[in-house]
Length: 113
Length: 113
DNA sequence: TATTAATACATCTAATACTTATGTATCTGA
DNA sequence: TCAGATACATAAGTATTAGATGTATTAATA
Image (cartoon, rainbow over all chains, first blue to last red; front, side, top):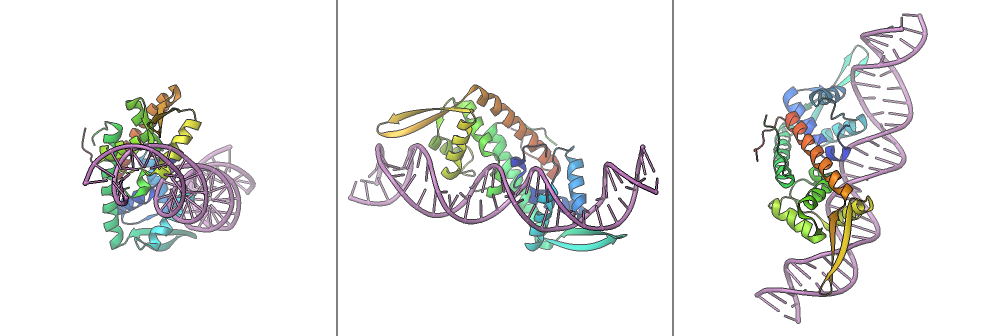
């Protein structure tokens, strides 16, 4: 990842949940590519981080899965469960709050969307 | 810490360096209190995290120390070295960039300072 | 048509950072 | 006088992630 990797720690779950809020269903590889594209290559999720996290979110009951075959190749789609949707909102909201706190603390001006 | 602790991971060095940019010299306990005050108790640094980090920054040559006695009580003041000043700017700038990237990715609107 | 790159899943080891717990000692205010 | 605040610090355990490695299919290209 282009950002010093420490920074991204703790944000992976939030990123995944948010993407699934907007996309109904996605598979692992698609998530890595989407994040890469949306961030101009600044965040490149590694598989070693992604798959264990997806499995963990599934185990927590936040994601449901559906495996499909594209030809002979397996593709595992992830979707938000009801709890996942709720949690996604919480996580994004918490992160927004965190950003505001850190901006104040570090006296940072950011571009407004 | 009030924020789910994952979020704060990776930001501790940046916070310390930034505070020392603005305060010339601070001691450990003072740093915890300042962060607590500035964030309205939302970020409470633990000593178990703080002291090892301060020692690490010193070992990296980013901080210099001066021990003083207030009565019989030891107080260890930390200041930025020349390299520390440079690194502080880098770290804050990197974090600002990270915030912008995450804001875009998570579609977050923040308050402008 | 052979080979490389991309797609797509996954696990494991090692490194790192942090939490929690523990320890020592001094000072202040009720 | 004694609890709470000030002030330092270490150690054990947990959790997260990077990086390496592995398998297999499909598409592009030389």
